[in-house]
Image (cartoon, rainbow, N blue to C red; front, side, top):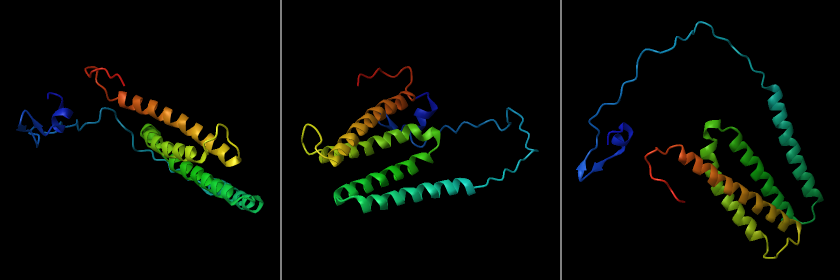
Amino acid sequence: MKDFIVRTSVITHDNQKLFPNPEPLPQLDAKPKTKVDNTKTEVVVTDLKIPTLKRVTNLSLGFASMIGLGMLCPDPAFLTMATIFGLAVVGGYQSVWGVAHALHTPLMSITNAISGITAAGGLFLLGGGLLPSNVAQTYAALATFISAINIGGGFVITQRMLDMFKRPTDPKEYN
């Protein structure tokens, strides 16, 4: 109860109501400790033409390859699976690429759940045989394998993230 963060989080203790906290918030020092020179400002003009052209070219090539695959593929089930896989890759890439580096560890915990869904879908599509007998089952085995690696890595990263918030006085865990 002497720790400020713990004290402000506790609502009741020993059948006594402790909320709202009577202690005021600690005041931060109003004076900056380092002198910052704000007299020089640089204006950086960024030309977005080349990055936009690269992104549009990549997306156009991807869509053209899907159309070409649709024209050449005799099996509609394979085309459906390839389309879903391609959209999942694009969606996953777009959602993860823009995340700040500080948020990659919590993001790994979220992708752990998504990889569980992917692994369950891959197991469903395996067909029950010992070895894959067609291309769809081979992709399902590959998806299950990669998802299993991602799930294991997600658990390791999540445990590391949780260990960052442990105090030396916390009891040791035996998970």
